[in-house]
Length: 139
Image (tube, rainbow, N blue to C red; front, side, top):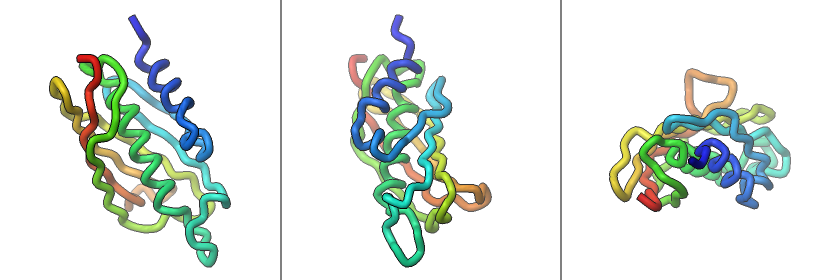
């Protein structure tokens, strides 16, 4: 039997964009995943404020959701994003790591449904939230 944790980790590490952003899978299992995005000046979207570009936030949320799907007990293998809605609540605080946490809360024969949150050090107010649907391959 294939270890889904190993598979998900290898999948994330194989994505050039994830490597370029230095995304790190910190937790995974049973349909949940957590990934960190360290602050990096190369990712600044607004030089006046030092705020990380929203595209980096989108990437961490999308990647984390995919990892959650891959680790779900009912998902046999890989996945791809079908639809992802992201609500940006505020700018991530410059200098702080962003952590995304995703939960695959429902899965059918062909589609997995996921919710995720991106946070920096302020745990009371998310940077962004996401909800999406992902393919379920090989089921």
